[in-house]
Length: 457
Image 1 (cartoon, rainbow, N blue to C red):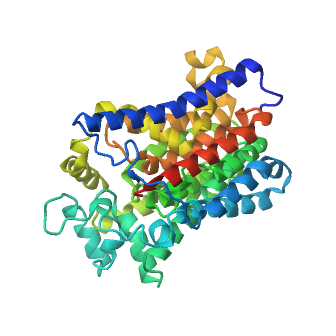
Image 2: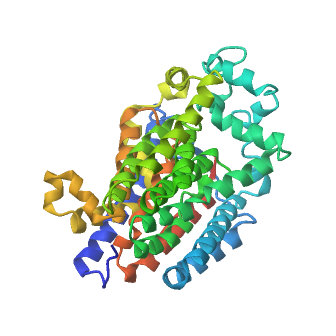
């Protein structure tokens, strides 16, 4: 469903108020974080709410980032509406890669890309120590807790072993080191610019899929997709959901098997990806509108997923043991000192920084312009409104669940990337006449954050 016609004065004003209020929440979180620090009650984030340090700077990526922002902002909507589908997907992917890399290079090649995954708490610091993969998997859970001689570093301990295996695998095929690891994260993370529109199109709304492409290209969270393992996780999860949508609507058994394998693999990349079940359910129910679900395809999906689960379990890693120990490790560290009363709302301010104020505008329009009163009495009827409403709503539910759990205090600008990208699925709810302006706002936010802060991740 695409919204046509100019925005009314009242709606346009409401959009501006919503977007401005969302940005105001981020500013407020910064002010309150600073005030608490001065009052001797630090929230334990170096540039609260961001995990970063204040350092206004420019770098070699600055001109490229400005060029990508101007070109996509000015021509993106027109090209998205006129290009052939395959060419659009290729162009969108290429532009997303350019945007991600240019933002990373604002910090320079070494600091922004090649060295980001090599620090002491990152994955690559453990790669050389993995000389026997089966033995590593069997003993993985025993090294999760902190304050042991052989405890895993922070990021390895905080994730299932699949995340470490990605970088071990790259090293084993001759692509070792920070540069290759960073480029792999960029290449996979940029797939969100293809996977989200492919999902929307498969679920029956090509116009909305096209409208989303420029917003996925100029996604502010590209700051953290660049050279971040969480960007890789987002790409894997989004591709799994896209394959699921294609499998269910086109009844392609191979796509069902691939989606099952990727979505279960996601559970072994990040414990937080269990919440991808929410948008996954939305995809299944949306696909159900076009006819009975293809049981052979679902069978292939289930079989592939069980195969991945069995491979890790039989290798000696039991997911539930890992999760239980990770929760314990979480409270062994700085998380026990981070106040829930601040982070439960400051995390949402970070979602605004990651997804941009457009996300808030999309959700406002979904509620006030699209949801009929019957939705509140019969929530399942929301699915009749299509992917532009259901997918952002599912992403919001996943984010709120993660937020309320208290297991993601701070750093969610990168941790929640797999959910935040789906908020862009509702870009078609924005009146066409306003989309260019909102694209400029999104790009400007990313440029300002990336040039004022030296991000940790």
